[in-house]
Length: 88
Image 1 (cartoon, rainbow, N blue to C red):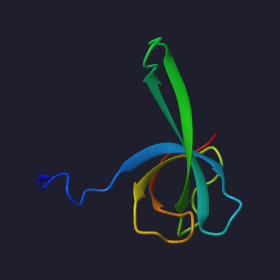
Image 2 (cartoon, helix red, strand yellow):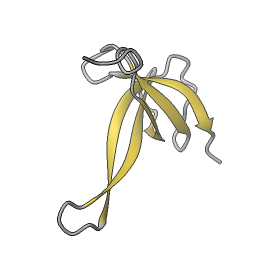
Image 3 (cartoon, rainbow, N blue to C red):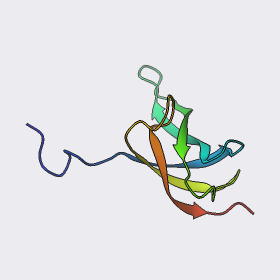
Image 4 (cartoon, rainbow, N blue to C red):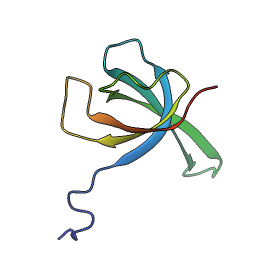
């Protein structure tokens, strides 16, 4: 049985906006790294998430925090919570 802290808590990710061309939607690239199971070298990968940005506030290069939410469209299951750092 899951404890009360984990149950109902939403996943949070931090990534960089790579596209903001659509209305109220940004594409966020979230990097991850893990050791290779056999060779133990650090393997770097990145996953792209489509996130809802209600105010069209985030732009390419911004570092944003996204949180898991209910399905908003075919691909959007994440929402922009706040902008951690603006692009220079």
